[in-house]
Image (cartoon, rainbow, N blue to C red; front, side, top):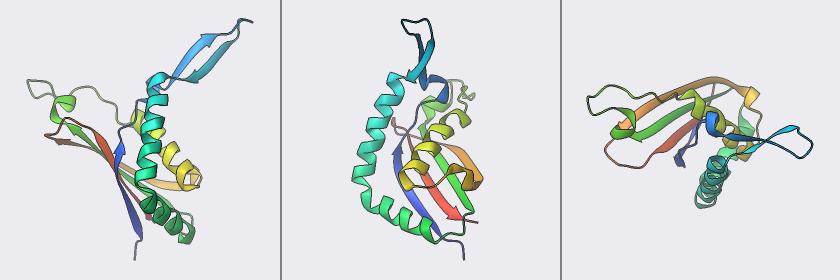
Length: 141
């Protein structure tokens, strides 16, 4: 039997393309730091973690029982306006750029290395609401 845990209504992460800002320090060395978009999302993710602490604890407990092979299924729920133009053609939104930030945050929160993830699934799901969020299922393989 495949065991799984679902974590719902996770804040929609920013794209990895906008995750970091680069600047030159006084010595002329180029440095990298988290962008304001990521810092803002980190606050939303932390608030989500506090509200969902029971589900997070259950997920941690489940992960301790798994044999190390983990799968993750992401459902990126977005408004139709975010996904499609007025003519109904898909807008450019690279889903994989949003997965990395969320995967790193979830694996850090739950205390496992993302190298243990052997299967990833992701889909864009349009809806009528204006907000966007992610539902995640973590399962044993």
